[in-house]
Image (cartoon, rainbow, N blue to C red):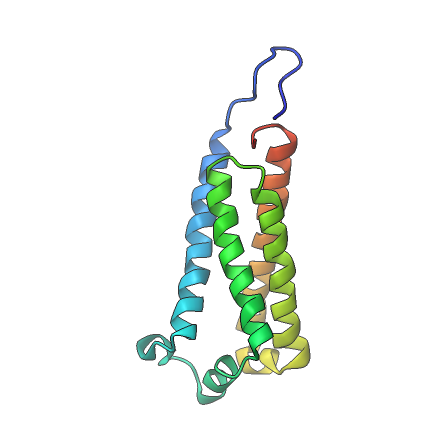
Length: 149
């Protein structure tokens, strides 16, 4: 924990930490919902998938499912840790990013995910990557300022 050298006090929690934390939990909860609905093969949820997309998502090798699960659940945990003002949110978000990149390597390099998901899927993947890195760097910045302990 960093103490302000001028005042000798721990820095106040900025309002944007609460906003970022709540938005992060909501954002990552959507990813967790997608993961659970896909892994449990929820018929109503999967009804909008094409046959090819359904075959793609249900044929992942075990290591890919593990990478996807790790990416999803560490992003949720990192978000909760951010709300608890824990410095551990930084490495947890880092693990999430590494796991996410492994899963995207599978989807877009080893498999034909780009073809199956189209431009919209690629764009959304880009947004997910940007948000993940933004959360990591935000948490790291808050830790460096001493807001996270």
